[in-house]
Length: 545
Image 1 (cartoon, helix red, strand yellow):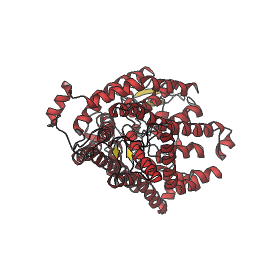
Image 2 (image 1 turned 60 degrees about the horizontal axis):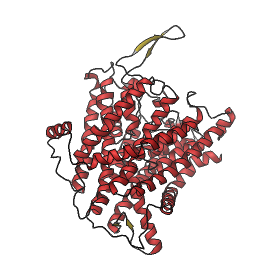
Image 3 (image 1 turned 180 degrees about the vertical axis):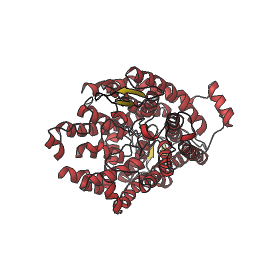
Image 4 (image 1 turned 60 degrees about the vertical axis):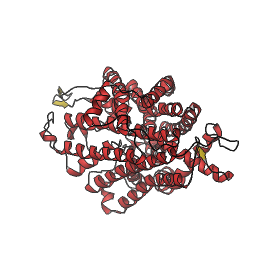
């Protein structure tokens, strides 16, 4: 409980300065010298503005090119320096991994220490850790501009937003975080170490540039581990305080972006309201998961006398529950315990966090545009209740905006449920499942939920190395990232083209506790109606059993 209190205190301490700094980054009209060099080399006019379609085309095109480049780096691994004698990655695994890291999902169907060399880890995966996070923030900022601007046909410049997010925010903070992690004992080297084991036999301890990748892995809500055990590995997460630091890095940018939102809107109470929604849902999830893990709910935990199976003794149930809730409530996907070993309620909470759309507080950037889309839906519902045209932040919500919102809210559930249904209907899937019954179904459901919501965590009991899972999960990650981005940018463009509607006595205030409660209710009802049948077949059935 002291750890949780310290975490909240740290987040509160940096909330205002970090949030306002990010607002200045994206509203500044000046360019750093290094940024001008990037623009000159890439042929970008930093003072040119882009409309919604051009901004979306740039974001999608940049991501698709990134997939091709990252696939090529993996396929040619054997010809690269510092390959550690490892062969190139197979075609479909390289496709899955490239899509995973470019879409900020960081789902891993391989063991990093035995599959990838240092060059692929640094020049391939770590680079995309920065760029995919910067893309998410850029899209969120573009949507905020849609609410701020009036009678405008532009949303800013994608290339400027991408560059600023990388150079001014992610790079310097990751450098500081990496130094702190090294000080805490996280490995940072360029070679393996030969040691003599207790048995007297020699043993190779895999090293590598772990701390530098770990920093952006958490700060950028990426989650892909240098080692197969991810943050449960002592070389990635040696102690309780490095564990606290990693959870802080996971949450700090999504939380502070609510302040950025309020500052850019000129209505900081609105940012606090959205933070309140996120805080309520995160607290409820943490309370439920911690109670279940600490009390050992479930047949296996009760038989063993504790729910420690699959958890690190350095952390225990409390810190494991905190990490699991934080990583699934954002789009991080890092783990410090096996989610396959969580109690039924704990695993169900982790799954539900992703099904909410990862807006609690959500991924870097993705959490802000996700909560704004849900706010549009909430004011639409409120408008239906009182018979008024819905408004949000001075913009009317018409049929056009609701079309984009409806498609946004349907995209991810369709990918999750269709993907799970197809996988479960295949005879070969039962061989890939590590468990039978409700828990086995949860493994498959969790995999597609994680992929389509760009989370990247896994239950761990499902073997996904077959071509079927490599391709289907890869497509779920790709569509789950790019389709919502396009819809959000089209929504932003339609809002920016409007004039501002003056507030009247009939305008619904969206910064009050009443709206916070309504938005929480809309989110929970939408998620419940969409996913309850599938949850009933998985974690709920297992918990009742």
